[in-house]
Image (cartoon, rainbow, N blue to C red; front, side, top):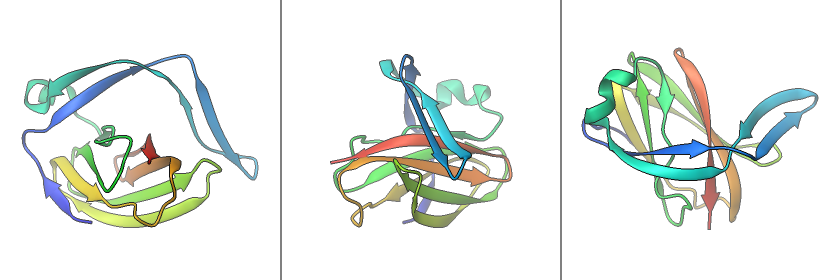
Length: 137
């Protein structure tokens, strides 16, 4: 896995509604999602760069994942980012640290060790945490 700084990334902005997904482990809420994709809109980060001033994680592409996926995120400062992958029961499956630069960052993830199914991934740093869903074929 490597970290690549990107200045011009195409982002699919997704709008969600109507399905709840919650994972609780030993009485502690691990993460929850309330979503179903209604529609998607392609955007260029150059056109929306002023809108992001805090830590943001974008949906991985492609999703569903076959061989690898690209995960894009924005961080307002250079940071050591913790990347975690969980199964639907909330069990930690994979963890790695990624050194990010100020601004938009991108890295490739190769989930060859994972079976087909639905997984959640979380990126955490000193500026926040964000979780997204990933589907493996």
